Image 1 (cartoon, rainbow, N blue to C red):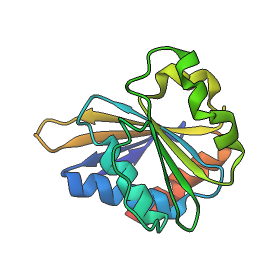
Image 2: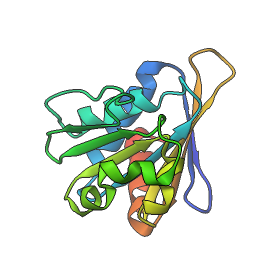
Image 3: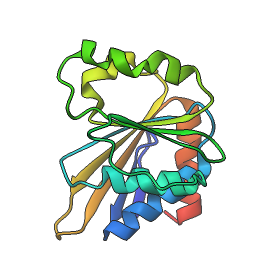
Image 4: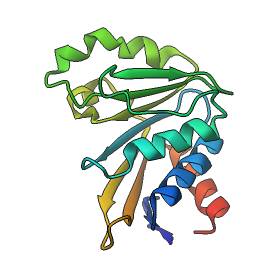
Length: 164
């Protein structure tokens, strides 16, 4: 179901949308203020389902939904959660309206989908989560790549919690 390599990269196979969301719940339960997640992968890969799981793991009052048209949603939970979807943005200067630098100063969790346009503004310590299609329709390979010791520790905790 999951395996970790020497660099701390964790690969997990999800067999259903429910598995993907539950993995997000497990991650959300482990996150602390200031956590930053960069979610990538093709359309329909599970990024928003995973973010919804994070919102559940953070005990948010509302479950995360796709912010494609609003670009940004904020959810109140044990830690505030910002979910951004930058799919519609094409230039780095388009991100100015989001005030990413101010978001990053908050004691919140931030998850960004389609963030390539803004990655120069991201912190150097972050967790990259990439979603690949699996062999079956609902199957996904989810690859967690930690940048920073806090995220390496988080992935070890996740692997232990989920029995990987």
